[in-house]
Amino acid sequence: MKRRRKHWRDGFGTPKTFVLYRTPDVWRFAMHFSGAIVDGYLAQPSADSEPGAAQSAAQGKAEDLAGRPLTISWESSDEPGWWTGTITTEPMDLTPNSAAG
Image (tube, one colour):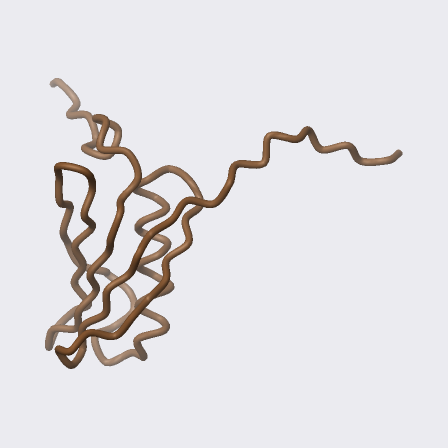
């Protein structure tokens, strides 16, 4: 059985924007990469949870897919229950950890 490669490892890179919206059953999302869109839903938190909890879970999903820490600046949309996020990458700390000891 041949294993499929995960889509975010196929060269999509870092997502640029994120859309998060509440449905009656779940929080759904769409991540926009350069030339691709990945969409899905958040298993947690529940659809009746606060937007901040869903935004935190969405950030974790984006970081999992990108394979690195990200910063998302959230803005509410004109549509009730919808938020858009601009994604930026955190700088990678390339300095070796120099613990005194």
